[in-house]
Structures are given as C-alpha cells and as structure tokens.
Length: 273
Image 1 (cartoon, rainbow, N blue to C red):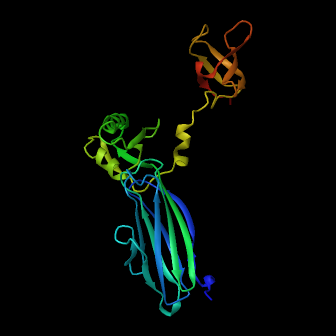
Image 2: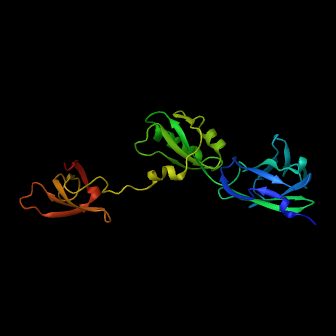
Image 3: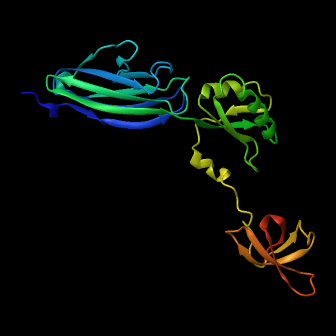
C-alpha cells in the first residue's frame, strides 16, 4: 500500500507578480518518501498561442537543471539519497515581451512509488516603477524627451512623473526594465536608473491632490488674489475643508463683513502666532 503522506512539497502554492524580464523564485523542499521520484510541470499561460513564452525551470542545490519547459516534455527523475528531502529552487521568468496582466499558472507534480502530490504557483506580469537620475533642474526636459521616445516603437513606457519640489530625479513606469534603460540611454540630460524599484504606495502622496485649504487656519492673514476684493488683506475666520472654502473678514473694511471664498483664491501672508 502506498504512503502518500511520505511525499512533500513545501510550500505547495504561491502567487506573485514580476515585471517583464523578471523572475519569480520559490525555494522548495521536496520529499518522495523513496530513493527516487519524478517531477513534471503543467504550464498554462494566459495567451499560449500568440503571447511570448514563459520560462519555467527547477534547479537542484548544485544549480543543475532538473526540469525546464524547453528541454523537458515529460517527467524528470529525481534521486533522493537515503530517501531524504531535497532543497530545490523553482524559477518562473516573465518574458520580456509580456503585456500588463499576462499571467501563467504552473502545476508541479511530484510522484514516486508512494503516489503523487501537487504544488501550484502563479505569476502575473506587472509594471515597474524606477527612479531615473537627471541633471538638476532639467527634470521637465528629460520628461518631455522620454515621452517623445515612449511613443515610438514598443509602447512599453506607461508614465513619467516629475513631482513638484523633487530635484534631480523622475519616476518612470514601464513593463520592460531593459527597454526603459535603452530608451533613456541617449537623452542628454538623463543619468542612470537607481538600483531597485519603488512601489505605487511609496509615491502615492505625489498622486493625491493636495487640498487648497492645506496650511490655512483660523486667524491667518491672507491676500485675496482674484474676485471683487482682489489685492485686499483679510483675516481667516473659518475653514471648510469639505468644500475647500474659507470665510474671511477684510482687514481695512469699515465694517467687518464675512466673505466666503474658494481657498485657491487667496495667498497666505501671515500665520497666526
């Protein structure tokens, strides 16, 4: 009678995302409960007919390839000296021509005289956000040049961001990091990409509109910059954050009359002490 409990794949599942040309890696421990077993992979890509091919490779601890989807069409034999568990590494490489949202599902089967068990792993192609160094105060020039190049050839650069107040760097979002490097190579004011990537959460504060009332409090002195009272100084008596409006009283008025204006129609002159 076979003993399926002797078989092991740890971890037996995983989901992640990588950029085009990147690799998803799982360090696995496998056991067959026997001196020999077999591994086989089913590779199910989202666009198997016209999409670029994902690469699936299983390495042993000596970096020798046990199985890959280019050389192996059937199962590969794996030895387990003394029936002990083995440390292996599963790599799934996202093709450089992958489009946003392309994905692959990989099912690993480990079998021996004790039966068979399975591990499932999924990878989705996602964009990368990288930081490009520029010459100081040339950020906008680099952005304009890069946008022009992004419209030519493969449309694999999605966005370029130059935050206000951030000097010497811009953010570039794209699918293929190799292509991102290539398209910035001959832009005169551009430098090199910094190592690593950033997440959307790290730059989300640049993408969130700042409320016009930010920094304005009751008692502050402001100047009205448009409307019938343009050029007049006034003191803030109320701040409505929801409507982004403030109520002010004109300082030089004979009779203090409350006036409600949009917060973007004033300029802060003096903070309340």
